[in-house]
Amino acid sequence: MKYTIKAFSEKIGLTPDTLRLYEKYGVVEPKKDENNGYRYYDDFDVRELLSCRRYRSLDFPLDQAAKLSLGIEKSDYQTTLQNQVEHITSELKRLEQVQKHLQKLNRIIGSSQIYKLSDFNLPNIPFEPEKVTQGALYRMIQTDENLLIDEVEDIAFWMSQLPEVSYSFKLSSDDPSHFDWGIAITEEMLNLYPHKSITSFDVIPASDTLKMYALSNQTNFDFNAIIKRFEIYTEQFGYVSRNLLWGRILGNYVEHNERFTLLEIYYQVNPTED
Image (cartoon, rainbow, N blue to C red; front, top):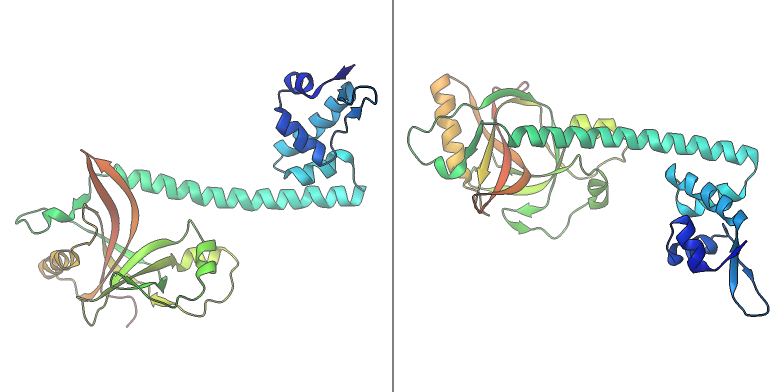
């Protein structure tokens, strides 16, 4: 039978615009009626469309799905299938990391061990940071305090590492009143994926740290209050403080009509290497 574009699109569950897109790639070729000028699709076009849509469901882009449905050489066909297997394997690896990020973030948000920075200046606030050994952190410095710097190298590389990178801050061990912000990635994550050499970066070496999660309802974070709280804790429990504080933004959410930024914060003590 012959079908107009409207009738055919209704039968196969595609919009006329989508049908025209498949036509553009040569998947279907409606025949023009010389008498009335209308173009008609036939029953065999359903077969071609189904074949192409099946390849689309296997995550091939439309142009490649069209070529596969129309037919290519056997050797090219096998190569294309193998390339897609490798692409999907890579995507599964990436999605597994994404899943871990989401699970960790959800677990942290549900934790009872999150401190409000606004409470840090109050006396007798319980404070029990976690002692952890933190691997090396690579950072691309983007600000001097809160002001963006002019020259930032390798920005395209760092952006390509999302979601492994995060927005981080560091306070100078020489001058705790001075801080900077920049993109950061752990050495472990950096080694998981192929990458070019990074020409410009700041490294925080692997070290023993005290870790905490904190909420702030301010744009400018009170780093002095954080440091003071860590100093009191290290003195009380006999840790050797290295006066190096860094951390990263994990996310934002609203609670009781108030917007909070969730921070993961590290304070260096007893480094693994001097």
